[in-house]
Length: 255
Image (cartoon, rainbow, N blue to C red):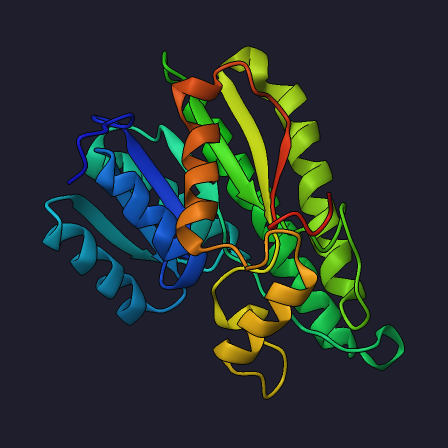
């Protein structure tokens, strides 16, 4: 475990923690002392994340949950509190992408993105805030949006961008609603990151690196660890006066 311990004795809940950015966030919290509850729809990837945390000496709990289901979300928060005694940090990372020109997008794909990316965040926020505002120490929530939305648009991602722009607006509004109750809410908007989602059709990782070197100001895409570092900052006491911000991590793409 790292010698930094900003979250010792705290419980952090991360949705969509079975892979990619969510897993990196969960590992980062554990490395700084947090007890981590990892959530997602499938048990096996969550168990893998828990194993990685425990191998490094941390404590973790896997809970399967569908963020579009109110009962699942409420049970998830209850499980975190039952196991570890509090809910101090929540990161709502679960999301889906369904691409294509808007006029060709199916209603099912539209609704799937809104249900998971927007309603899922609303349901999670509601359950998490309801617990955190009863705690003397309150809590911190970080929602994962995207540069595609409030910050940038690209062809073939109109519906996804609409859903992620909504995450930013929803989060910042909720931040104003609940900061006086001790619940601090912020957003991280990643750009292209080292996950399969940033690969174009038939593109290899080498092809992506070449494209990034030519098109991004930094010359490369972000790592999942860099996105996780932004999340941990916003969730930490170092950001105690940061309320309702949307922190972009995108290698300078939208600068």
